[in-house]
Image (cartoon, rainbow, N blue to C red):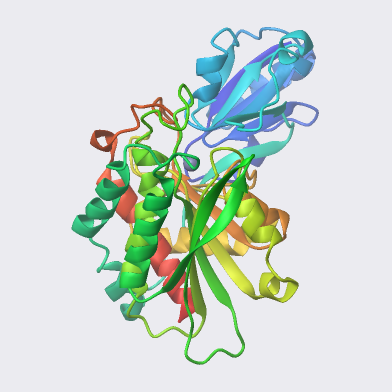
Length: 412
Ligand SMILES: [Zn+2]
């Protein structure tokens, strides 16, 4: 098998078409096109075609067979930690291309608390892309809200959550964490409550907060979510799990969005949800979505989920907007908000994976995960080392600004 990559110039989406060769397998991961084939003649033609575009096809050692190529989607770098022997051919942080034969694949046990997914490498597919967001004219009312996003407030919420030591869903202290978040939301004027959920054979909580619009017809609900819980995979419920990035960063982001939107004269209902049981397999969000009444599902206009928004893995602050076809309009709106109100670079993906946006997407509700761009390494997720000193406030605050703008525009 021949295998190689072409580095694409950023911001030139049309290049994808110009550097593909009929019959040749390819997968795009951001700025990297990976090609593979067993046909030498096709390979020579591909070289020539890529050269004509002024780019070059770098040949790489190809361990194993074409059928051994797999796409891994992961949280942090859990896959590499657990399977250091598996050759990684392309490393884009959240996305890897690896070579694993059937025998080795059989040794990777399926787990409930999935931190990675392994699937055959799709040919002719885009795992994620880097986009140039539309820049729209800022709306003064939205700009004013975006300008209220405060580092001091965000840092206070974040620090308070991390200081609990662990937010493991089944830890003795989780009810206190959830109650504290509920009290914060009530303090901003939301109707907030703890909703019991089951996590395996144990019990935990979601925190659900609402602000109802004064004029409620036709009614739509703008939903913002984040998971409140944390985990230390090497320990039990009592082990230190500061979860600063995963996901105090998103939960504190939700509190900051709640604070900024508290005084807004909304025409649509706002609902803010902090889920429990995410780390054990999306228990809180799955139970929440399955309990929605059919008419309520239809009313949900959008779900903006934040999970890990504060580690800078890339040279420039980058957000990944991850959804599915059903969320494409919301992805475009978020990208436009990023282009208009922030300096974020934007990546997009239509492969939803392992966070609380997934149960909504499964129910055909437009939901998008907003997460730090993961081209580099986040080694600390799900360990005792996911600590406050690694937080990048600039990245987190820009993701919050993007989400404030998008939620506010929808709710106004
Ligand atoms: Zn998470």
